[in-house]
Each structure stands twice: as structure tokens, then as C-alpha cells.
Length: 522
Image 1: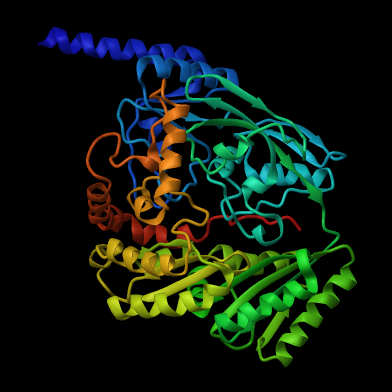
Image 2 (image 1 turned 180 degrees about the horizontal axis):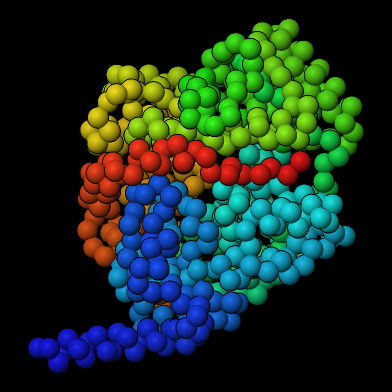
């Protein structure tokens, strides 16, 4: 018996050593050093893995996947580990994480072609800054831009604050380099804006969350840098008024309107309580707020356009008060209030999250109906619904009633999700606007997705990886890799979550909101 155990262990070690040789011992991580790669920032999932590998290029990724195919070893790609749905966390003790952190070169910035070729491990903020140096703009902007990576952004089709003008991540890509599950490299790093030579394969991999292959490089679109930016924090009486103001702004500014964020008063109150240095931008409270931004080619004209818009908004009873950012510092302060709104919920206790989208015209009705339902289910629940009104994406979060038992509140996660997502379906919306499916929403997908669309997704996955079992289905699978149903594991994670956090919470609640929030290029 002991000999068999030793033989099995020796065989496993021998296999891992073959993987290790591909990247070199110094670029492999094992044991406790893997901890940062096995936990995600919401602390919902604690994963398992045999090793973390950090390849330097597509060729090394290809060798890893070829070997994984032969040995039937599960591979989970990971970028900056900033995902919010657990897709980057493995649950198989024999799985291998492929981290793209070493593939971090900006290969070329072509200002004439308005393109930038980058490797997948490039941090988003670094890509933004490289564009600025070339007097160009890469407009993808997220709260995690200081640590998230381009490969992860593309694999999840990230959204952010400027989708209104520039689109999602997939709209900002001309070409991709991808390593398929069988180790073959799809080399599509082309700068062409027009290429009608069959299927546009890049879109298969953007938003696929790593289930079809690992993105290793991309050609990104760049845009002219704005010469002027006008930023306004606006008090509005209701989401309906905000929607009318949005349409007024679009009619005046068109694509120059780059951001239009909707926020409730309670979200700002959480900022004022827990964000160091936070100040109310306006002299009196308002039920709702809008953070609007216009890019232009002349500072005076851009400011006048925003002033004219707000004057009309006041006349039409859409705007009750407003203030302008008079400097880069003030602009950053206003944006910090917006980007902090997820983190400042933590000191308020448990929070049940939703990342939904509905047609822009349906946002006010959705907020009204969903809030009434949630408050009926949990009297005293505090709805913190904020996000990108310009594209219909809301982070519809529900904070526990003040003083409530956190564990009992979080136990209602599935029931609240079901209620909110039912209303999302009524308005023909999506249960995942920009965060992806991962493992958090895996069992919800069958209910939310058109059956024919889901069958096509399954067929593509099966066909593209039929000879390779190395890349798990992740967002398609019914069970975790390490066994046990998704719902049961979620229940266990949430049941244990308050106990795991209790001792650390008192020390970390304030620290959590003192992290450096995303820098936004001026």
C-alpha cells in the first residue's frame, strides 16, 4: 500500500516537473506562495491548484497546453486576478494556473495607424499611459485598472466608464494572438479595420473567459487624445430625470459625451462615512446624482457645452444643482467618489451583488420595481444601485439592514438574486453586463440564456476543444472541478464567510477603502 502511494506521488511529481521545465523553476510557484493566486478579492472562493506557471510568451503557453492535453491536466488562465465572478480560481488540487504576468511587453505603439500591440499581461493602466505618451487615448477605464491586465479585460469583454462613447473591450481590438487548447497558436495580430475573409474569429475569444483558448497578445485601437475635458457632478431628482438628461446630453454632445454615471444618495453617504477625505460635492443632499463627462477639442467650447446642457436641464426640472471640476485634482476627486462605491459598502456589512443590464430606456422602471421587491423581501434592506446609465449597466447591490445579522442576510443571496434576475428578464436584460459568468453565475446561465444560443455555445466549446481536456468548461459546467454542486459550494462559502472575516474585519474595514483608487488620465 505504501509503495503504491509513493509511486503515485512520484508519478505526479514527475509530471509537474515536465511543466516546470517549460518555464524554468524560477517562474513556477508552489505551496503557500500560491495563496494570492487562489483567493479573489471578494473572498468568496478559496481555490486549489498544484502549481502556478508564469510563461514568457505564446510559445511557452503552447507547450504548456500541449502537455496539459496529453496528461489531461486542467489549466486555468489568470491575469491580474481582479475578476469578480471566480472564473480565475481553480478548484482542482491537480490543476495548473497559467499566469500571464510575465507577458507584459508593449510591443509597438503606432500613432499613425492609431494602434498599440501589447501582450496579454500588460496592466491596463500601463497601456493607457503608453497611449498618452504617443498623444493618443486608449479609452478602456475600470476601477481595477491599476492591476487588471489586457488579457483578462478581453477575455471577459470588460466594460467600464466610457462604453457610452467607445464601446466594450471587444470594440477596441483589431487583432488577437491566441493559444488554443491543443497548443496551436492562432496568429491574428493584424492592424486592419477591414478584413472580410470569413469568420471574425477574434470575437470568439473575447468574452469567452478563457474557455476556448488563452489570449497572449492583442492589437488595440487608439483614439485622438482629448484636448479638453469637462466633468460635472449633478444632482437630479430621480432616475427618470437622469434618463431625460442623458438624452438631452446625447442630442447636444453626441459621441463627445463619454461618461454618464448614475448614483443614489445612499452610495454617496457611504463614501462620506468611509472614504478618507471625501466631501459632498454639493451644498445640500439630492436623491440621485449623475457624473457626466464631455471630451472636446477646445477647453472653452467644451465647458460652454456642459454649462448650456445643465442650464437647459435646470429649466426642464431635470437638474437641481451641479458643480464642475475646475482642475485635474478636482476631477480625480469626483471620480474617486464614484469608483469607491463598491469598496465603501464593505464596512456597512453584507452586500448581495448584481451586475445587470437592461435597455437604457428601462433603467428607471427596473430600479423602481426591483427596489420594491427587495424591500418587500428584506425590510430595511439598503439598495445601492449605481453604474453606467449611458449603456444600461447597473451594479444593483443590496446592503444589509443596519445592525442586521450578516450571516442571516447573506443566506438570502440566492433568493434575492432570483427575484432581481426575474425582473431583469422581464425587461429583456442580462444577468451579467460586464463581470462575466465565471463560477458565481454558472448555474444561472441556463435560465437566462436563449436555449438555442446556449446550444451553439456548447457546440463551439465541444468542437474547439474536442481533443483537449486541458481548459475546463468553467462557465458551462454544472459542477466544480473538484466535485460538489455549484449551489452547495456557494452555500458553504457564504456560510463560512462571516466567521472567516470576523476577526480581520475590524482591522481591515477602514484599510479597504484607503487603497489607491484608479487613476484616470486627464
